Image (cartoon, rainbow, N blue to C red; front, side, top):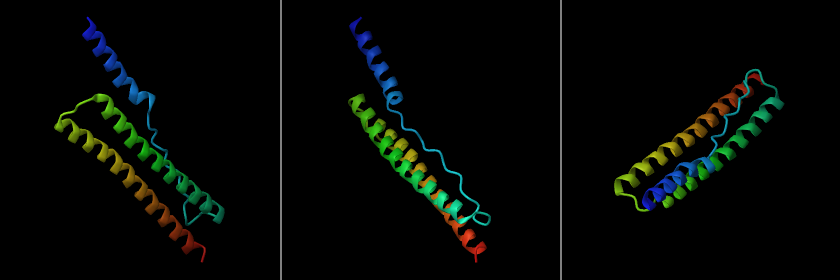
Length: 119
C-alpha cells in the first residue's frame, strides 16, 4: 500500500512539474514590408525583432533549466534515457535557434528592400 502511494505521488510530481514551470514559446512578430514601409514602421519592426530575440533567449534558457530540473527529479537514468532526453532537448533548442536565424534573415531582406525603395 505504501509503495503504490509513493509511486502515485512521484508520478503526480513528474506530471505536474512541467506544467508548473512551462516555457512559453514567443510569438513571432509581424515584419514590415520593406518596399512599402515608412521609416517609423521599419524602426518599429526592428524593435519587435530585438524584443523577440530577447524573448527567444529567455525561452532557450528556460527549456535548458526545465530539462535539468526534470532530469534531477527523475533520479538515476539509464544511458539510453540520458541520450534520448539530450537528443530531444537539442532538437527543441536547435529548432528555436533556426527560427531566430530565419526571422533575422527575413527582416534583413525587408531592410534591403526598404533601402532600395527609399533611394
